[in-house]
Length: 69
Image (cartoon, rainbow, N blue to C red):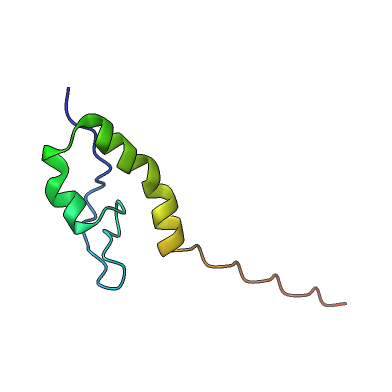
């Protein structure tokens, strides 16, 4: 069975956050991924959605224009 991975092949480390813009892992996590145990990979992966949401919040939608009367 292959190791679990959050990689989506969008490998760009953001210099401001140090996170991969695709999966949310740090450069150190990416480098160590192959040597981590499956439980450790799964633990890291469980926190990635929150990590990405905190680092890259969704923009607020623009308010709808008022209807003309």
